[in-house]
Length: 349
Image 1 (tube, helix red, strand yellow):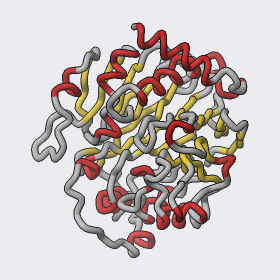
Image 2 (cartoon, rainbow, N blue to C red):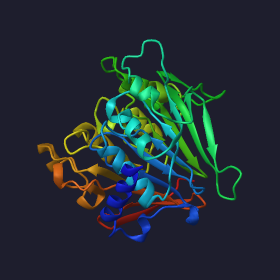
Image 3 (tube, rainbow, N blue to C red):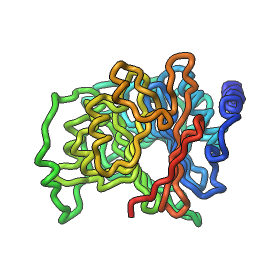
């Protein structure tokens, strides 16, 4: 409890100059999504118009990342618990913050892969024993709906795949032949990245895709021979922008309008991935949580106003990116409160 109080106080100082657009809460009837800076890990917080929350991954071990999550949750999104925690796979930069986060905020339901045969990376008892109300093992085709009994649009969370298994295509589904003709394989990935949970979030016509660190060959199976996802509005760049993922077949099949990359200052934003994303005809904007500070960053970076954090180390402020979907689901605004950038896009109809 003391950590939570201290965290909220720090958050108030960090965000005291944030514009009104940054503040969340259900009063405006919008769906809000926050990409929280966990220094090259993953933590994506979804807050519904009814103030229910879904956190996809929770950063690294220790308190730096959980404190940042709790700051955004309590001082910006104005929620006091995590209703659903979805852990996409068992790598430390995705699950490591779970136990310390549970000391800062109550966690109700944990959705993950449980314990399964051939599990390549075991998160250990600290992860499996941290307090929560209940745990659910995700299966392909599972879903849950938030706000369905309210006057707002419901938020539907669908799980299209996990543990290298995917939903079955609908009867009579069109073959993705033209795109799949360019398929090529990479070396088999034996890590838990390949077991990542693939999630699709829908709010009216708005569609958001998050596949954790799903890797290349499994991505092929997701869209070939049939595109199991369909087209989306917003693509969370998979695996922090590493080229072991972000198969061009997926990009060409999903045709996102906006892509948001939760990278680190030296991690992710790989040259091939950056090139494929920026060449995508459908893409209207790409955002980065961190500026790529490697030498190739002279080429492989979006304009600074589309990057939340321009520095590394102690100088990094841990700024977040926010996306807010209009109550009717027909438009959405991406903002970086720390620098005042915001841009509105129309949802694909």
